Image (cartoon, rainbow over all chains, first blue to last red):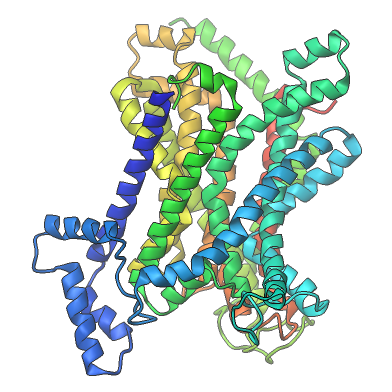
Length: 330
Length: 295
């Protein structure tokens, strides 16, 4: 057990280390003079702002210092929570900009991931039961998983938002409101949340349903199922055992799909101008705000790593085999 | 080695191939997926020849719905959407082929080496695989693309290939692990065949069907990642792609203007390419795996 978690922690630690190094390395590999080009891209009008920017960049890149020292300084700043200053929203610190956007992204992602996983598994297991259902569910599931997140989002925005006029298609809450603690505001928040959530939910749902359907069919053909059937066990009991066994690979699948789901949330937010990290990335790219982009990158990587670790723990709790014979497989 | 076992093996493998072909030709999923994919491929290959010219050129009336002159209508600026679509399809296939191909090659190289060598080599490669596996690919690509200012489809595809290989490496490693202790591999090793040759002639052929299916999934994955990158504005600036078309449609308010002909074709194109690949994959699974065949 300790060995298993030790190994996992080592991998996550190394991954974080690699991500930070990539983040540090890329601007230095960029052709040309990064400081001059970034200052000119920032489009600042006041000369003192330009000078401040120039000094800030030179200090941050520490171009007079040796490379190893620049690298250590980068880590030092990072561990103090200093991700630099946003160019687009100068002079707001990047950490503050990100903190404001995070609740929206988490509010979309967490329910979409958990609900699609739960519902997809239930539905996939249910579909494997009947041929007719199977033949209709399967193609729909494949179409859903093959759909790019942003396209489904665009279709939903157009169909339910603009043509039917039920849901708003842009923003995190009504433009006429300021964030406050009232039912009216909460309602607006929920209305704006629904379509981005639905598009994320549907794409992921298709994938889980197909995965579960395949796993259940595989488990129902396994020896233990035939044995139970031969003993005269009720079909419901056999199904329950099959479901339990089929859910385990789906948990591993969740860990593998995490990066894809996060990516889906980012592009979906762009479609709906939802004020989370995805929209922030778009703004950072459009405004050439590389500090913001790097900050979001680190935030996403950290989030994915933590989520992966949580899934690892859940896996151990759910699977008695891993609990018993821990250590061989990492 | 005498000639007879070789001949026997050749006959046997020909038999397996004939059997696979027999079931392939009767598998509805495989054929349907293949038909859709081929139709789109042909459209991408020959469409740009028929609908010649710069896909971004302003050729027609602005804001025109589909008609005989402009089959898929025109954009807000009078660009022909059909021309953009067929050029975009070409880009989609290029991203899939290059990205998927590079990822498959890296995944195979690392998976075979790790699985066959074992020991320290395996530990190191496995660690590397796990690291790349948990790094969210899109986040890495966003940062790299934004900094390097990559605006060409082939370079984008290369970067996608470099980040999407880990799960294949992992799967191939596991399979190589189980294959390398089999008798025929031991026999080859005892008769002094070099590791590289054992991997390519003894181990790889035994999972050729699996490798092919992995490539198909990587192809689809590359297409989806490429479309996401294009959509957030890191696509090509000198040419067109389906993701870029969606980006343009969203940016210039095609939704509010009710220009459904601007955003339906590109998304449908991506979904059709990726979806037909996935369905083909299920079909292939049934062809290669007798347990799954419907009687």
